[in-house]
Every structure is written in structure tokens, then in C-alpha cells.
Amino acid sequence: MTRTEKEGGVSMALAIVHDRFGEPEVLHPTEIPAPVPGPGEIAVRVEAAGVNPIEWKLRSGLRPSPPIDEPRRVGSDGAGVVTAVGEGVDGFRPGDAVAFVGARGAYASHTIVDASRAFPRPAGVTAAQGAALGVPVGTAYQTLRSLGVGPGDTLLLHGGSGAVGQAAIQFAVLWGASVVATSSPRRADAVRALGAAPVEYGDGLADRVRRVAPGGVTVAIDAAGTDEALAVSLELVPDRRRIATLVRGRDAAGLGIRGFSGGSPEPLSAQQQAWRVEAVPVALALLAAGRFTVELGPAFPLAEAAAAHRAVEAGTDGKVTLVP
Image 1 (cartoon, rainbow, N blue to C red):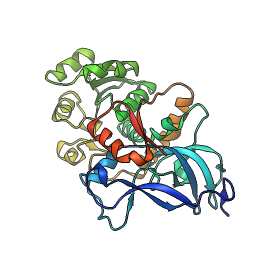
Image 2: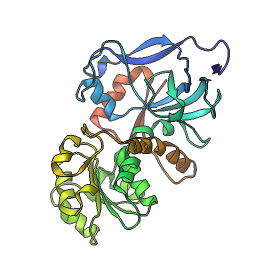
Image 3: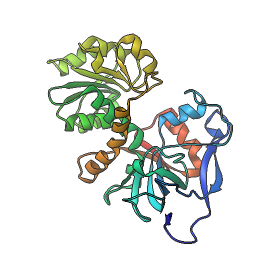
Image 4: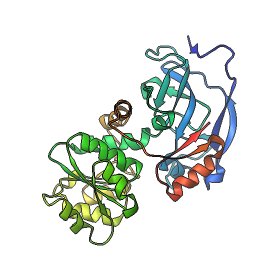
């Protein structure tokens, strides 16, 4: 039997949808019936939803996806308060604060989440911080695990100031690795504050990395997607199976490197998928303990999802969120 936050709760919810591919303006709010959780699910009143680059790529049609035959919900990451608990769910009750991943439409006032992909949100972690974790933190954590990054490694990370890059720096440092991360001069201090040695991208990058890491580089992650990032990684890392791209997945096999995102034709293994989910409770605990940080960017009202997508497409410092 479903347990609800209170009798006589909301009968309708607001969700962001699009019924065609195109510019951000195809996103629009619509009323939907208030979600009711099925077995193994929880219903959540969303307090913040994370906006990820993959979402604008899917919305625009840049990243292939099935044809749209009905209004399509958007978003997977968020945080909020449990309003109802489906049959067979233990560990959650109405009123619990949670962060979640893998929702079927996180851009909403209320949504349904598989209980295995929702996690208690500690009192010291805000909804915006919880919503910022899913895709970037899961990607960083899984990539580092897949590459076996740990003590004795020197990691070259291309794109250190982005959400994935910042998470990767922090996990790698916590696990005993040294990190050299590329960034613009403007963002160098942000990268340094996380424990990495910043280097400016551009001509002469390989030589700058050698000066910062005279003992050599053992592993590299491309979160930038540039030709330079791939070329320098191949030049400096002896073992190509310890190089991964998160942006140029389609090129990975031809280069003999790993591809974990960016249109990679190689699906994630069950273990890799599990790591992406495991990352969220790990990060939540570290945030609560003051050992992990999340850079937050602009927050937009839910109805302004189009503006949020424009901001992410254009590039902005910090994680963009939507607030119902």
C-alpha cells in the first residue's frame, strides 16, 4: 500500500516537456497528474533539479534519441522531499529529504524515482547541492574507478574546472593520486583550490605538463573533447588503456583508448553503471563531512527551463539548477 505525505495532497503537478527537437524554446511547462509511486518507487516533491549538458544535446537532436511521439519529459537528477512510498520500499518515509538520480523527468514539481536511485540527504547538504551530483559526479567516479586511479598515480585531467572535472579532481586526490588539470587562466585558482596543479591549455601544453609533473603521467581523462587533449594524452601516457575520453566516445576505439560517454558505442558494464549510482551517496557523505565541494551556478525557476538550457549551452561557471 502506498504511504503518502498527507491525505488530500496535490492532484496535479507541473512538468517541463518538449514535443519536438529544436532550440531551447521547445521546452514548455505542462500540468500532469500528480505522480503515484508503484512497487519499488518513491514520489518526490522536487526542490531542485540539476541541468546537465546531455539534456540540451538530446533536446536539440544533437545526440540521437528515439522519435518523439508524445510530450517528452526532461531531466534525471534532483533533490527534494519524499511525498509517497510505493509497495515494497523500505528505508524511506514521507517527509524524508533525498537526492536522486535516474528520474523519469526531474524538471518537475513532483516526480517518481526508483528507490534504489534515491539517497538520504544529510541535514547539512542543500537541495541544490544534492541536485548537482548525479551525472557529473557519477561520471567522474565511474571513470576513475574504471581506470584504477589511486596512490602513486599522476592524473592528467583535461577540463578541470567543469562539473565533471571538479568531481574527478576531488575523488582522485582523496584516493591518493596527484592531479594536473587543464583550465583557463581565469579558472586556475578554482582548480588549485581542489588540490590539482593547474596548467593552461593551448600550444605547448605537453611541455607545461612535463614541467609540473617531471615524474611523468600515468593516466589521463579527457573532459574537454579537443584534439589537443587527445593528442597530449597519447603523447604522455604510456598505456593507452589508461586514457579515457568523456566527450569523443566515437573516436575512442580507433585511438585504442577508453570511451565512457560522448556517444561511445561501447555500453557501460553493469559494474560501471553501479559505480555511477554509488557515487551519489559517497559524495553526499563527503559533502556532509566538509571533504567535498560542489560549485553552484545560476538557479532558474522551473518555468524558465529554456533559459537554463541556453545558459548551459553557452557555458557558465558552476552547476545550473531549476527550482520549482
